[in-house]
Image (tube, rainbow, N blue to C red; front, side):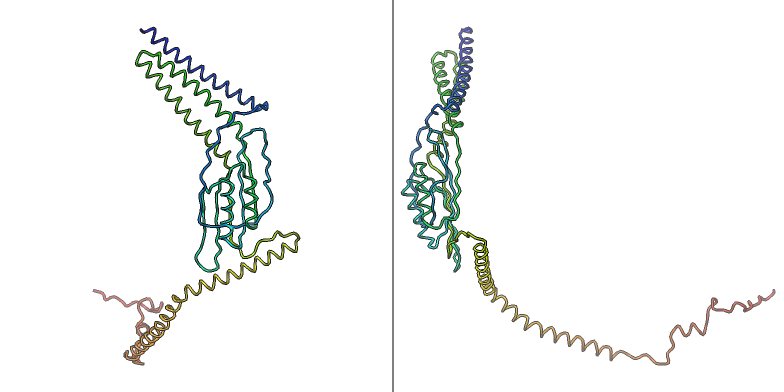
Length: 343
């Protein structure tokens, strides 16, 4: 019985070592295939997400197709884009943007709307949109046509190497899981069964972790992320061509900013006007009272000075007496000392 238990433990250690070697070999082979130009393992396609409708509209005008080139050799590419759109009619622009998203089969991941209530304020919104990679370029074109496209940034991320590595590790872990199940059927001792069960739990945990990582890659590859910023304006920004045009645009922008600053100052002054009126009324009441009290205080002080007894004009000061009766220090140096009587 002891020999059988020892043999089962040796078989378990051998299976674990073989599975590790298989994972390393599969990973190296997959990396070699990718570098050599062989087709990488295809990831399962992500399920299409539901389109989320938002009650705000958007409009923008822009142009140009996608500025990135995606290889057609089966590589795993993540597409990202960022658009800044100006809108004269904010609601219509947002509506057109979301309609373009719905036509592309995408959905809204998040929305950040800024809509101040005071008159003359400009609204803005930031949308994070998920668009199917197959409709990525057509959606960018439709979104640009909704308003005035002033900025567009695109980026790509090649995750082929990481994706192939995850696929290879999953293949190796599943093979290891099958071997552990087979060893559990042959295990007779409870201690051996518990050891195999612990190893199987660890393998299953790694399978779930790598599966989740692969699903994340699938989602990012299948659905591109497009961040759209919609800003309400009174006049579309025109791209300056010459130095004079740029100076003129800067002057117009500065003048518009000055006008808005004057309006803000007027609104702030009106906002604080009741407080200023109350302070003026208090000052009009307190200042006269302070003046009256000050006059009374000065009058009382003058009366006290007049009622004080006057000193006689012939009075002599202590200094005068000291002059008539000088002390020993003031005696003449040649004066003779009085003679002491003789007894």
